[in-house]
Image 1 (cartoon, rainbow, N blue to C red):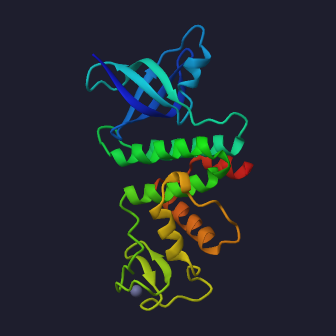
Image 2: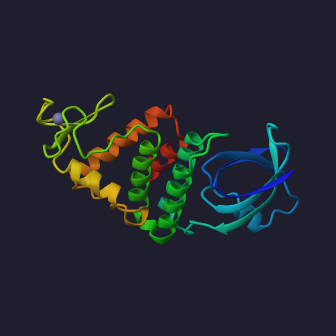
Image 3: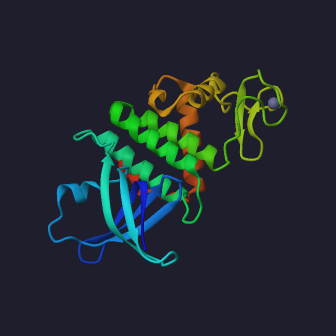
Length: 245
Ligand SMILES: [Zn+2]
């Protein structure tokens, strides 16, 4: 039985005789994987179709519940790659790694597909904002995983005006009127506004990384650490990114 899906390529791991085991995020937000057999003369098109973050139409052959299906066709429909733009390529690898860990076989979550495809299109349009788009994706991924409460009101007392001073795993965003935090350790002023900005726009308007914006710097680091902790750490794509940029 052959089934065809619109999907985004996540990872391709080399497999016997020039083939690869490739994972995908389907349009319905489910992780799919299959073996792409080695071809004698790989064409540029065949290779490009398995680049992380490529949007493709992929066909699988195999029984419904067999362990490894076979990839019979994979046609590239959109590539977010900007040739010669290293930072953007490295961020694409990070995004593919993240979604490969978060998406599950047999579990559909179409928010994941919408988020990743929006990030791919934004990367193509603005490769120079790759790091901003990565931070945007990390924030929404935590949200999709149910780990990021809304910053509108304090998770402890419900106050919606006092500055947010702490992110607690139990209560979420906590404000200064109910939570005492050493001023040196409190979240910077502007935290709530930065989070609102992230939530209100799409990936194409993801805030650019601005090293003098303390709220952005602190929140990006905090959310990234939270996400990587949840995923068990050890994402090689991140190590490569930080060694390079
Ligand atoms: Zn509070």
